[in-house]
Image (cartoon, rainbow, N blue to C red; front, side, top):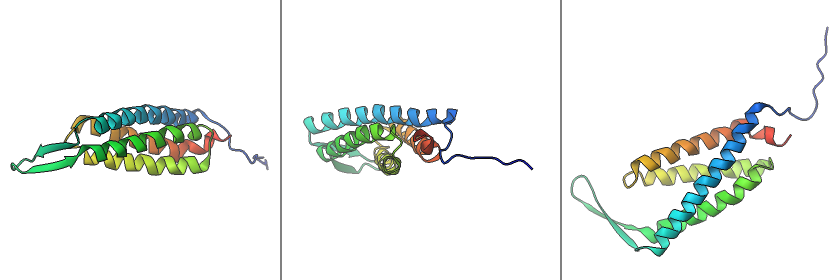
Length: 138
């Protein structure tokens, strides 16, 4: 009968690269959100969208800009803490990225392709952080 000894630390595997990928995608997405946020805050305050049946909807661009700016800054901070392997950072990254994805769902009518790309990247970040995030700590 053989005995297997395990240490208290989990071994680091090649899958830890997913977390580094998530941190880089988080930084790139945050930079783009910050850029879009600043453009929306500085630009015109109101936009009008014409619906498929001819209805017009008024949209506050400055409010959306502040949302993008705040989420972008939070994502930059969390990306750096994610690389340290902190559990609380993994939890907050999952929450903030899920909120970011919901925000991009709301902007689907205005920017369909960009929103789809960002939602897909957000899903990949959530996968990397939840499945392989524990390995960064070791």
